[in-house]
Image (cartoon, rainbow, N blue to C red; front, side, top):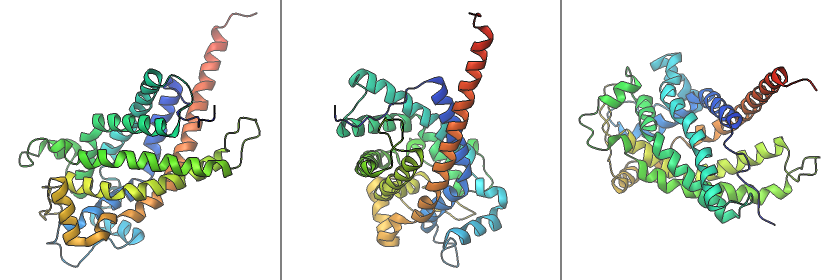
Length: 309
């Protein structure tokens, strides 16, 4: 029918289990880069630190985290992040499946339909897991706290603090989903195809194209991520220093522009781009391995109970 086929994987047990495990593995693998990114995004909120910027690049930044927090400090906040990322990925697939079956029962969707459904599913999954994202951000800039402590020790943060920054998150969803889909669909015709006659790109081609499309989309939506992170950690002290900033969207934008200018919206961009490739490769490899293992186990169990012919 000429429409691109998207969201073909249903919310099956095999798919959700493999997705959950692969998300945890890939998230944990790049956790040091994730923490470095958040520290870069929020560093200028703590102007009382002496000596200028502490995180000047990826290698130097990783060394600085290791020096001040120890090797384990590179993974500070990862527990809260995997508790968020795994369920969020599965919820997004479930919401995609539900929206598609109710609103668009055909297996093929137009680009507009795909962006709308993908965006709505992303919004829903984000809403359910957002407090854990807040805990992850606060743990990343704090020392000597736990996820529970970072959520409970919040009497001075005001009402609704667990959902602070949700608005810029929502605003960034549709630009990210739309641009990612547009770039991928533009490049897909040029990708090498499988030899099975399906017309689908090879696994390597899909990974390369998806990585590039995700990088472009993340770059475009990155300012929303910076605004979100700074709103999430507003009022949180770090290493004994009190942060300055704002808890509303417009006030946060003004604060970033006043202290850092345009580049302030893109602090931490490089670690974000660097982590895309290892995260994608680890995620795809783990997903395929886990799903194959589950299918093999089911076939073995079926062969034991199936009656002999």
